[in-house]
Amino acid sequence: MKFDVVEVTEDELNNFTAVQMQLLRTAQKNKDELVHKMEKELALFKKLVYTDDMKESSLLAQKQAELQDELDYQLAIIVEQYEYGMNLSEPFIPENPDAEKVGYMVDYSLPYTDRYSIVKEYYLSISDPTERMNLYLADEVAKDYLSSYYRTLLNVLQSYSR
Image (tube, rainbow, N blue to C red):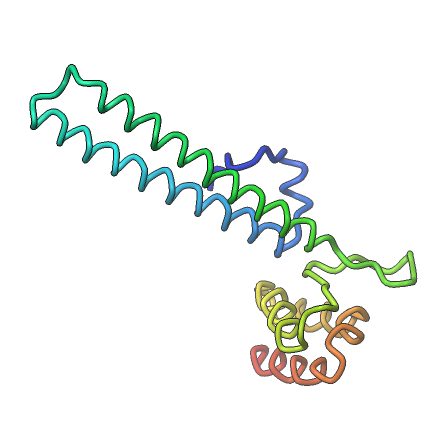
């Protein structure tokens, strides 16, 4: 997938966590869908203008400018949402500064069910079941972050490993 919704270097891409990569992919998908929708709308308007024999009219240029303004506005919203998500997904570093970074968003203001879903999605994105279980069992942040849900997710991940 080509990423042009925001400028991202190859090194930054390589250092993205699974959550950050998903945020980028979603922003790019939203941008691509928006551009496609606007192009279709302009093509239809162009056909209408040509069908009505109004080629010399300024209507097409006005519609192009209108659609470009709307595209710019919607893209600004997509980029803002992406940047906000990226700020939230900064890996959590517990009191121990030597602790490893985690690859999922840690936000203690979320209810436990949302925390559970975020951590579950992250670990299920790891295709190797053995690696998934080893990482989860070593994840001290998850134990604190999920509290009693930690054991529940452990059981779920174990069921995927069978």
